[in-house]
Length: 129
Image (cartoon, rainbow, N blue to C red):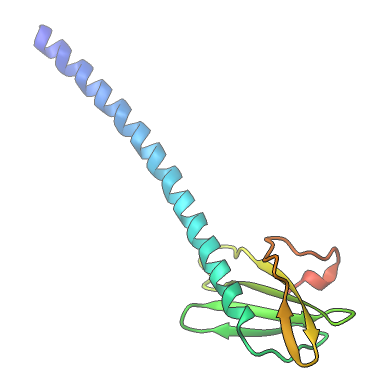
């Protein structure tokens, strides 16, 4: 009787550990997916900052077909620029990264302080085509 009881207790303990591991695995997969999306978006932003742009008052977008990146640039007021970039693979809702810059002569210069994960403007100018 004692060996059967020990076997049942061991089985219950293993099932409990398995369910905890499954829950943690689900959380880990979600975190990995979020990190991959963030890295793909930041890569798209870095790619967009290195492109030659001819800024316009409306959004002008470019796509990188191999990596499925999309970067869009818009000329704001006072020679300020706004760059938006994201992963356009379509697997999930994209995380869009933004970066301000300015137009000096014919050259686009981006701010040295980096990027933001929210649009720095508070109006409809943040809507991408």
